[in-house]
Image (cartoon, rainbow, N blue to C red):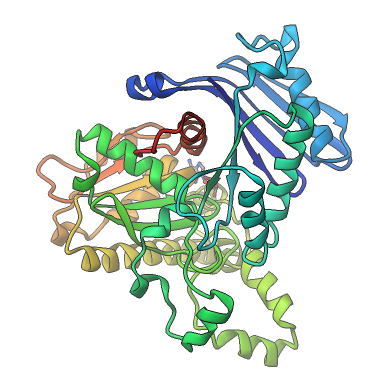
Length: 414
Ligand code: AMP
């Protein structure tokens, strides 16, 4: 089956077409037919297309909305010169999988999109006011552009956390706030954590039940998840993606009373403070230079800037704190798994985070660590009882496979 994987944002659309089915899943033989992106939808959009592992083509086109962008993508998919095998009309797309940021408490697994499911995604708009409305626009656009009969599947970022126990997802605030407004931890990046956990147990030839690991998704957004017996038992992101680790522009954990202090001292509204904590904090806020870890790492190497050093130190300190907390909750783990932009590519950051975990049975193999840049493998030394791995994430593959499984009526095992 050719599955179109879509990630629709407010003014952008990312896509991949992946050939997958139950047989391909079993043989790990899924095939990525193409990928691309449409940015700045609403004006002169920037479009990037890539067939297979071929070269990337960049162009611009006036695309007024997501529907127009999707139609443009379809025209490229079916055109003879796109170079994509097996796709010559909209009928050659057998299903569409959507990344949906928030499924609230309604969705604990991927779901075939019916009118009822669509209503459920709408009901979660309160929880993800910036994301869910765009996803709904994407679903409606697919119905229009590909026709009403193409099956669509929703894959929720939050679903992996349906297994969190109450004591991990409830905040210690008056209980009625949970009852009235569903204020609780939901967790995000679930599809990424789920993929690396799946891949880890594949590499180590373990069953799901034998998988006891801490996964670290360290990108521009960052989160940590404790996985025991293959299930998430805690995660660092909360009601929103703001909680937990230090991120590119988000502060992560802070004393909640700071909001009141900033409001009083700086005369800012709660909305303005929310923006400050989400968009002007984190690595950017501390360093005063950039939210981009690569820029900060280069700057540190060349000029040893004090605030840049501090931003990186705070980032690593916070990650270590979560690893320590999760090791305590899990009574020890088998491995720490790094993924996403920083986790996959920055050996120095991984080394900083891993330093000092000898007490827990972890020893870094410097050479292995240096060698693993954007590729998969082990970074711990022989004999470590707590191992370290780097596993590049692949959320699109999870979405494509879930979509195929849901369409074929198979329960999803990963
Ligand atoms: P993501 O959100 O997963 O795309 O990750 C983006 C983050 O990964 C940015 O902060 C990048 O600077 C960071 N990143 C990518 N490559 C490197 C690298 N080689 N060293 C340090 N940070 C990197």
